[in-house]
Length: 139
Image (cartoon, rainbow, N blue to C red; front, side):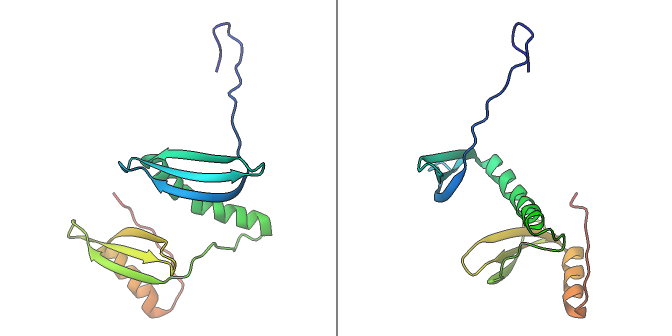
């Protein structure tokens, strides 16, 4: 970025070194999510994210956590996993897909839409007891 005189400008970033996550809240209108932290100096800080950014963060975090775990222990085979507490399969509005929800015992959950072809392939992988990997086009 350049200022009016053509000189390069530095964009200042504020870095927060978190000591503890203190609060998580949803705005009454559901449009933003707030994450409260205590930083290493004891200061209370919060980050408010629009729903779209919170969704992008949720999609990004698992890969970042796995990358950090692999770097920390210098082992590319490591995975960051959660114990499965429950699962549910529901019909989605699209007759060709179902909604599959996986939850941990403490309530963390993720919902996936699955096409019939994906459901069949996953069922086969579980029934044969073999290791399989698959990818499907979603569009």
